[in-house]
Image 1 (cartoon, rainbow, N blue to C red):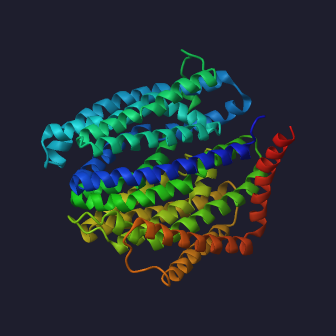
Image 2 (cartoon, helix red, strand yellow; image 1 turned 45 degrees about the horizontal axis):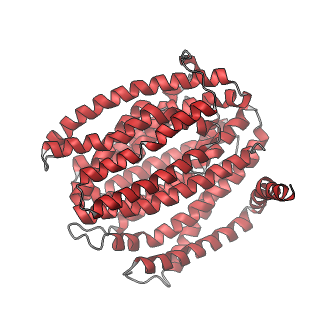
Length: 511
């Protein structure tokens, strides 16, 4: 039985959330082991190299989103010829990027240890760069094209399952290597080799599953908006990756280590919320391709309810539990102060705005309005860089959080206004009401938590206990708020779940 759009979307969301949960837990284990075993400087240089390597992703900016938009129609029509042509064009582009990536890594291995970080032997740093780059090359050369295909076809749950397997394998390998006193290079090499599994699997699986026509001639016309989409990808990349580079250039490597501890939590929370774009994004793209505008309005209201509810719960708990988490996580590290309350607050606020934009960005991208919103993307990137550089010079670590917050708030408002005026013709008061209620819930949970949260926590068990209590309180307040202000949307969502999963389960049971 073929899955409906809703079923595929929710299955993709569920798998992606499981993937993020596994990544969040496993991601806490390995960095902490590196931090406590090798020290803040080793942790900082590893994170710094990773961020510099990620800058090559600017070369592929836009190709993923433009490819997905180009695939919606042929996938809806089951047109193998057009699907193959789009993929051939994307694959040709990514092979060129892979070659450029090799040249970039070669250049970085010379420049980085010579001019940026000089504390270590040249061979130590250069070889570490090559090792960390292995998995990224595999993703570009083999996996990216077919990961995009699965996303456009609402089958992200396949990629999510692979990510879960790879993350667990990577964690096991890292723990074994670190506990047996292997060098940082060997630990990172093991990680890179494990992460080659996903792109190789996607390459062979998708070519067989979708009957991709080999040696088909690529057509650039099949991906007409890739350069407009690039502006959006660049803005997103700047928001996610500028901070570490700016701190590397204008602050110190230990400050990079402090940043990565906080940012790790915020980045994973963003991923948990934005994972709802997986499945839903391609579902809205399919609706738009079929001109089902009224259905888009109904589903957008439900989508908003889901995103803002999760944002309220996750960031309420984060506001209360972030500093206790950092205190326990870094209790054995004494080479720099990790407790930074204002920095923590600004990062959390920026993360909230990043989540607010999700529903409106999804619809804009699904409609293929890359060119129309390109200038907003460019402005966001410029704002982030300028405010962050000035902020770091004046205020240190806090400056990068301030830059991200300003850029994210601007871009969120730009998406809301554009969607209301050009695609869905929707009053922006819908957004204002959702945002106000989300902040109100966060403030309420924070002040309630002050009644029972101790001044210090000495164990993870204690932290988990208080985090669980805070989560329950946040969930109750959010559900009550949803029932009072969004009763119709809440019941529409519940009815969708019943129609798409409960009825399906009952039919299977009867059969």
